[in-house]
Image 1 (tube, rainbow, N blue to C red):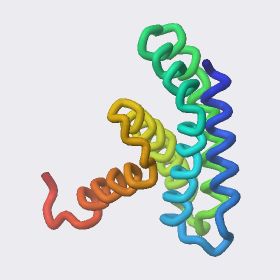
Image 2 (image 1 turned 30 degrees about the vertical axis):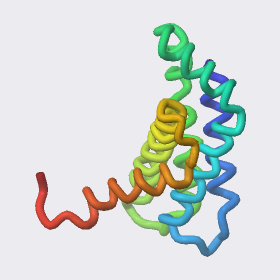
Image 3 (image 1 turned 45 degrees about the vertical axis):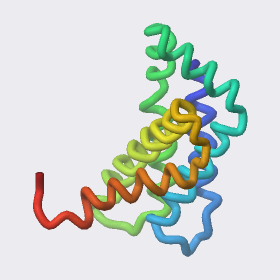
Length: 141
């Protein structure tokens, strides 16, 4: 179970590194999580089986989560190579890595649960919702 998460982290880091050098962090974020999530859906039966095991087994979930900090660090390093220097660089890289990992998982689960496997559209809807909450709001809720 832990291997699947590590594989996913490596795929995500490679997708981040594979984006155009002049791409904005926003474009890298969207492109890399979309590309990585598509890989997760490429073998839908295996992904469904993996998620089913996780939903039924606390031990499997614990095994997978035992590698989460390692995977998040790997992805954060890839983002950090993209971010401008400054005192908040490391923190920002870690934050965006965590969001990337979890948002991709959420989008893949959504597609599988709703039989709606237009992953780019799902990602766009999720990102638009987050952007509306965090960037366009005129007042906090």
